[in-house]
Image (cartoon, rainbow, N blue to C red; front, side):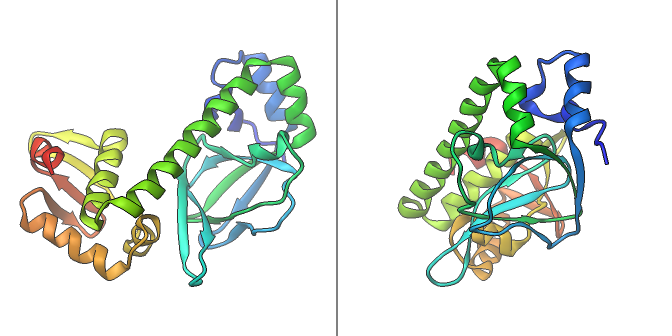
Length: 225
């Protein structure tokens, strides 16, 4: 099935004109994955560029203890599989649907054709991949040098900057990650994350509005920590 709208939500395609976007949409096929489904297994051959039209995907590796280490979370408009366009390779990660996900799949050959007609896209991809690599490097540095509370504060602040909603009481933020996923992202345990979140509430930095929504009551105090 042709996916008519996915090209319009992709960051690397945002400067293309309407005709070019329609042409790309005509090349794509639609895929659907229910929550919890594995989209890519480590070792799978990657023959497509995956475009997230709707939903969230976690990309992770399994460590020596058999536990997930989340590398990054992808959302609407993000892509993955781009590495395969530069070199024939197999996946070195797992990609799993965090909720019901609608994807658009673009073959490697078609994607290469798009780049040949629009060379500026290649530069955007390189910058996109570099930013992703820098995020992973920052994560590794934090895990090895910072305590859990500092890592948790840093993660919440980044989410608040991107997705927080300002109100008269502070900044509201929905935590779409489960406690388990936060633990797997920050390299700790679910129990530790729950304890540190309650410590932040006791410190007066955050307030739980629900199990999945918090209020950052004093952003300056938050940054000082």
